[in-house]
Image (cartoon, rainbow, N blue to C red):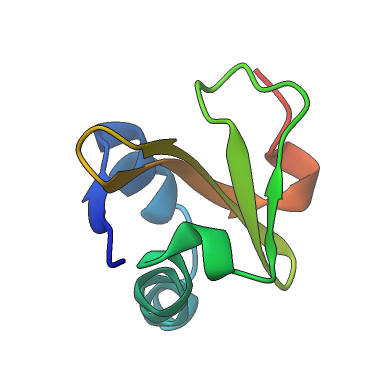
Length: 89
Protein backbone atom coordinates (compact mmCIF):
# COMPACT_ATOMS: atom_id res chain seq x y z
CA UNK A 1 0.00 0.00 0.00
CA UNK A 2 1.29 3.44 -0.89
CA UNK A 3 1.90 5.86 1.98
CA UNK A 4 1.73 9.66 1.81
CA UNK A 5 5.05 11.36 2.46
CA UNK A 6 4.90 14.38 4.79
CA UNK A 7 7.97 16.54 5.34
CA UNK A 8 8.40 18.69 8.44
CA UNK A 9 10.03 22.11 8.78
CA UNK A 10 13.01 20.40 10.39
CA UNK A 11 13.45 18.26 7.29
CA UNK A 12 13.47 21.28 4.97
CA UNK A 13 15.83 23.16 7.29
CA UNK A 14 18.30 20.26 7.36
CA UNK A 15 17.96 19.70 3.59
CA UNK A 16 19.12 23.28 2.90
CA UNK A 17 22.49 22.46 4.51
CA UNK A 18 23.18 19.73 1.94
CA UNK A 19 24.85 20.24 -1.44
CA UNK A 20 22.10 21.15 -3.98
CA UNK A 21 23.28 18.48 -6.42
CA UNK A 22 22.71 15.80 -3.79
CA UNK A 23 19.37 17.25 -2.63
CA UNK A 24 17.62 15.98 -5.78
CA UNK A 25 19.04 12.50 -5.25
CA UNK A 26 17.77 12.49 -1.67
CA UNK A 27 14.29 13.61 -2.74
CA UNK A 28 14.15 10.92 -5.45
CA UNK A 29 15.35 8.21 -3.06
CA UNK A 30 12.73 9.21 -0.48
CA UNK A 31 9.92 8.96 -3.03
CA UNK A 32 11.21 5.63 -4.34
CA UNK A 33 11.91 3.90 -1.02
CA UNK A 34 9.46 5.36 1.48
CA UNK A 35 6.20 5.16 -0.49
CA UNK A 36 5.92 1.75 1.20
CA UNK A 37 8.28 1.96 4.19
CA UNK A 38 7.91 -1.70 5.16
CA UNK A 39 9.42 -2.87 1.85
CA UNK A 40 12.49 -0.62 2.10
CA UNK A 41 15.66 -2.71 2.40
CA UNK A 42 17.77 0.30 3.53
CA UNK A 43 15.39 1.23 6.36
CA UNK A 44 15.97 0.30 9.99
CA UNK A 45 14.21 0.89 13.27
CA UNK A 46 16.07 3.20 15.68
CA UNK A 47 16.74 2.26 19.27
CA UNK A 48 16.84 5.88 20.45
CA UNK A 49 16.34 9.25 18.79
CA UNK A 50 15.98 12.74 20.24
CA UNK A 51 14.52 14.05 16.97
CA UNK A 52 11.15 12.28 17.33
CA UNK A 53 11.85 9.73 14.62
CA UNK A 54 11.64 5.99 15.11
CA UNK A 55 13.14 4.86 11.79
CA UNK A 56 16.09 5.72 9.60
CA UNK A 57 16.75 5.37 5.90
CA UNK A 58 20.34 5.07 4.72
CA UNK A 59 21.52 6.84 1.59
CA UNK A 60 25.31 6.67 1.31
CA UNK A 61 26.81 8.89 4.02
CA UNK A 62 23.42 10.45 4.72
CA UNK A 63 20.53 9.36 6.93
CA UNK A 64 16.85 10.28 6.69
CA UNK A 65 14.98 10.10 10.01
CA UNK A 66 11.26 9.45 9.85
CA UNK A 67 8.25 7.93 11.57
CA UNK A 68 5.28 5.96 10.26
CA UNK A 69 1.73 7.11 11.01
CA UNK A 70 -0.40 4.00 10.53
CA UNK A 71 -3.71 5.79 11.20
CA UNK A 72 -3.22 8.18 8.28
CA UNK A 73 -1.02 5.88 6.17
CA UNK A 74 1.74 8.50 6.10
CA UNK A 75 5.51 8.66 6.46
CA UNK A 76 6.59 11.77 8.40
CA UNK A 77 10.14 12.82 7.60
CA UNK A 78 11.88 14.78 10.38
CA UNK A 79 15.52 15.24 9.39
CA UNK A 80 18.20 14.46 6.80
CA UNK A 81 21.96 14.80 7.22
CA UNK A 82 25.36 13.16 7.51
CA UNK A 83 25.64 10.05 9.61
CA UNK A 84 28.11 11.78 11.95
CA UNK A 85 25.41 14.31 12.92
CA UNK A 86 22.36 12.08 12.95
CA UNK A 87 22.37 11.21 16.63
CA UNK A 88 23.47 14.61 17.99
CA UNK A 89 21.16 17.12 19.75
